[in-house]
Length: 68
Image (cartoon, rainbow, N blue to C red; front, side):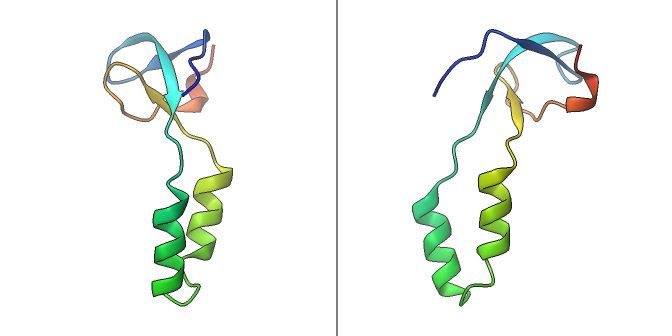
């Protein structure tokens, strides 16, 4: 996992924090897509494309509207 030097404001920690992006577990999503006969594919695609920043301190999502 690559660390970023940029910091964003975390509403839970109430300060600027370093952040990371959780990797997508493609094996798990392939299994879910097979078990649901492809109905899981749109969810898998969305998770793979949309990258959500998570706080390094509390691991909660960082709201991107608060970018400074």
